[in-house]
Length: 492
Image 1: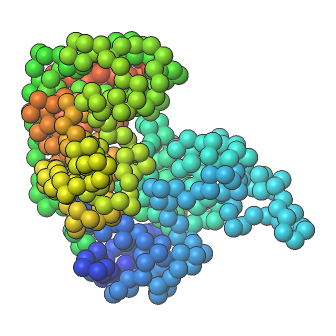
Image 2: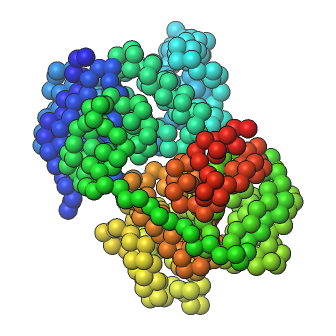
Image 3: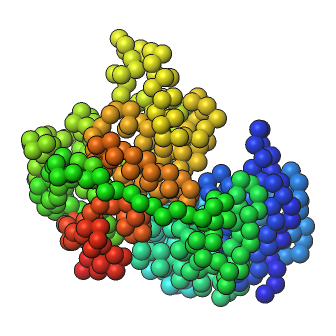
């Protein structure tokens, strides 16, 4: 295979931080090249350099044998380099076809007009070549996350890209959608397209990639060929040590803290019943669309309930809003922390104390207690940050998740509900978050953990419930649970 991209000794410095320090790699045509590393390792900076958003301070880049001297995003796209970021760049109000050919809409022959017949036909051909059954006339805002991901790939395919960079492409996809995406990637590979695949899901990296480049603290930690890598080897290069066997949970008592009876929140949740004990880590497995997230939202009072009872310490309680849930000692960490949990432009301090403003205010004014409370809980969960006044937007995914956890710990809640607690979080931070969950239940708290990652649930849960079609379809103790057993209940 021909070398498509050569990166030699690339360095990028920001104020007070060397994001990349003499990093080198190459990507061949028709190769899937994994790029992995903890959050803050330099992956995003390298991607932005390759896509033209940043200019390197030192080093050289050659694409198809030609030197690249600080190209712009437009020049990168014209050369055939397309980056598909975790946050989609589609225009929601426009149709699928308009998004695929954005900036290249076919003319109807009269200046300033678009031939929608030609546009939709061309889009159908592109979608058909990729085996995608998506209506090109539908506005993108009506599509699900997986379909939007496919439209991004269709756009890259339509301009005959030579190098496609995929940034955490499966972070919000279910198992079926991941399989379809991987089929598309293999199809691009067969057509000679080079692919850089960035993911925290190392099982996918091992299954899909031909070679892997590992970054650590902005430096090259290692290059591995397919016959050399395994999840364990990659993790060791990422964090500088072998991964420890997690021994979490086991703090559950017989005391019932929460009982949910016949919880119904249509159309996704239909008669869910379960119990949660003091000190328990209760895992919830299920495919996307099984109702697991909607169950959590109803439990926290976000989505209205049509039926069912919630009992705390054996007593029925009303939870009709998040305010009532918080008052009852229930905290909720949603699956999309950036959109649903964080105030990105506000400082870390404010993001921690916003959950219990009554504790840090007097007569409607924030007091000096605000800073001390934030500092105490940020230290407790070990948030890595420049300062408490830093915008939470600049923190890594793992540290943002810790800020949300610190907020709930500051409210002194008794029950924490985690929806995808480690989505978009690197391996080292995952382990830290697991330890923090374990510390919480050791101290008498109780948790519900919803996760798409079955190894995660198996590693940390005392008990696992499986949801399918809006109902509980199975229950497993720690000893009974296995990936095969869980998957069987998820799809049956």
